[in-house]
Length: 381
Image (cartoon, rainbow, N blue to C red; front, side, top):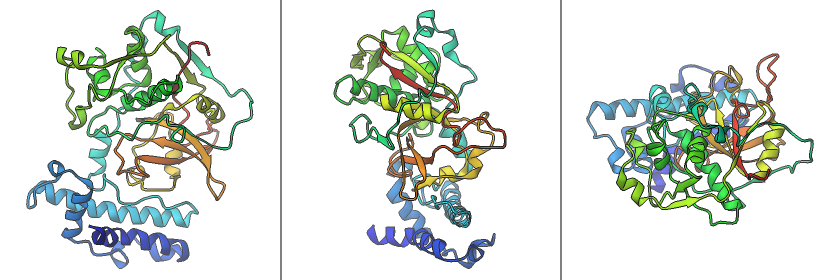
């Protein structure tokens, strides 16, 4: 297996090295065959062995196998093209082999997001819930640390995987709640996305939603959650499972004492988001449907395409766990995704921070990351 990993990843490793030293013209042709390796079926098989469970691997000789193999090779070529373009434009080449390399853009867009504000179910919530929302938090002017990372403070659970289900809104929100519960002095506890998705009564897990939909449900149910261990995630195949008596009986309940307030952050105020992070992780929505995001492997993601039409393109809810500045003085956000730990940097993506978009765009952000930021806070805040 180690031999294969070296050979299959060598095309990207060598490309990274060459891209930093060779002129872009060598890689600018649309015909990649002049410098791309000739991929073999063996490489695809070994990719499946490394990144897919046995039940997820297509049978050799089937049409599914051939389609996914062709997609795998196409994605490898597209990763090289993206990295070449990034290097020519002075950006880090962030694409590389990850667990999504055998799916196409249609599958990616259909099955891996779930942020949906169109229904906005929480608007039907009780007056008691709406009173808990502290709207439009703005930067106070206080001095902020140069970096913060809640992973180092033990307030972030391991990376999870939403599978082929539009349930990102659940994962982004439980992550914020896990951090909040830890900050109250409790052991770090993984909360159940499945229980919310099955039993909230308004939004089936795979049909999409927002963080406020989850908080509305919590408000109506005494801020009681289930542990992940007692109610594990089962909707990864895209099936919405109903709430059953068995599920409710197995749920190990944890109640957040004294309830919550919900802080929404002024759209486009990146300093306000940074200040909010002093109080713990924040749920954020981003524009994630770009293929360059699907192919992300490492480094600070900085595709200029992610600056375009962000306000109307938010489609994926994730968890913001910190920020920092790299050795080249490039600022970034630390984002926990819900596509498993074999995507990106162990399931995380470093996203460019503080970058503006189109001309006359009033928002100071990248991929829309500051446009819908929500955070649980103490009732005393």
